[in-house]
Structures are given as structure tokens and as C-alpha cells.
Image (cartoon, rainbow, N blue to C red):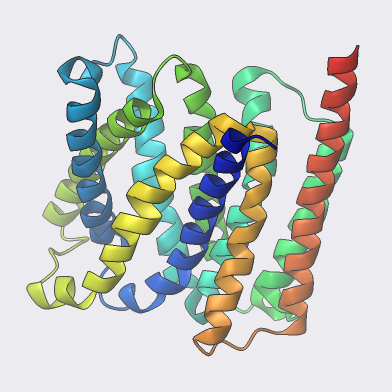
Length: 311
């Protein structure tokens, strides 16, 4: 193993451990402030930090879209508005088990990536990938229901929350897939421009939502109450995780890097248990099934890729 490859592994680990911790961290914060204004404060500051670094490292010319404005706006809006809005709204809607459900859904992103690759790049999924998706869906279903099928019909918001989180996870997959269109750019440039355009979308959405009375501007007490969570979300789960993930995947390759997403629910589980959440055996079995499905699909793809390279 080369030093560069080892660096890629370390970067991927930093990213997934940071993301695994953000769901439990957001539990108390979502009781104080809505996820929409939290997104503005979080990614607004992240975009500013990225912009300052890019200005010093690559200069003013790096802020040009080079004719890719629409793509950058779409990918940035998907990641920094769609992902954060939907995932954390879903987590809040799901209640006490929201952080667990959200973290498990993050682990399904490799399989969502297969569907996005099929639609966006025309790469058809294999039978093994489709079977893996079904098995992973069973695991997620076990985590969501905890063995109680009544959640499907008794009027709870769990299923609605699951749909929100799933679409949010899909938004991040779209962003990650879109990065493949900018291989000639530095990781810093792609991260910076997409975050800037994404935050602009966040500002527009919040302006109209607040104007219509659907949202209200948070008070100083609310901002102060979520300050600890914001510091974590901006630094570790924001600037550090996004940059580490993008760079780490470029070093070790997507098929290797995506496997690290399996550590997100494990990290979230450990932190949730420490914080007093009682995890049932049914939930643990569901997580295990989901992760095994993802690992199995990854191993199969490795074998297929190895045979293609040999031929």
C-alpha cells in the first residue's frame, strides 16, 4: 500500500466518521431550530470558508463557471439545499429514532448511485446490484418498523420521514455523480462553486418561505442554543468532511471509497447508544442486513472490474 493510497483511506474515514456523528448531534438542535435555517447557517459559512481558501490557492479566475453554470447550480442545489433540507426534516419528523433511520439511509447511497448512473450515464445495473437493492431495502424496512408493522397504517409520520430522507440521500448521490463531469477541476474548486450556488438557492427558498409565513427567522436565543451543533456541522461535517470525501475518493477510486459509507450508521449507532438511545435487536439486524448487501454488491463489482481489466 502506497502512502498516497493510505492517505486516501484516512481521508475517507475522516469524512464518514464526521457524517456518522452529525445525526446524533442534530437531535437536540432540531428541537430548537428548524432544519432550513440551520442549513443556511451551516452551508453559508462553509461556502464562505471554501471561497476564501479558493481565492488564496487558485485566484479569482477559479470562480468562473466556464460555461457550466447550470450544472454547478443543479448539483450544488441538490447537495447543499436538497440533501440538508430533506434529510434533517425527515430526521426531525421521525422522532427519537430519526438519527438512526437517517444514518442507515446514508449507507444505501452506493446503491442509489447505481440508479443515478443508469439514468445519467446509461450504465445499466447488474442483476446482483438489483438484488442487493432489494435486500438493503428489507434491512432499512426492519430499522424503520422495529418489527412493528403497525407503523405502516396507524398514521405515524415514520414512512413520510423515510421518503424525505431517501430523496435527500438521492440528492447527495446526484451531487457526487456530478463531480465526475469536472475531473479537470480541483476538488477545492468544485466544492466551492457548488456550495456557493447551492447556498444561493437556500437563500431564495428561505426568503420566499419566510415571506409566506411558512418559516420564521430564528431568534438570538435559538441561534445560541444550536451553536455547538453548528460548530460541529460547519467544521467536521462541513468543510473537513466534504473536502476529505471528495479528495479521498479521487485517490482510492469510487468503488473503494463508497464502501466506507457503511461506517456512517455504525458511528451513529455507537454515539446514539452512548447518549442513551435503546436500540432493539431488530434494528441491529436490519443494519447488518443493509451493510452486508452493500458489501456483497461492492465485492461483486470488484470481481467484474478485475476481469474486465485482465481482458
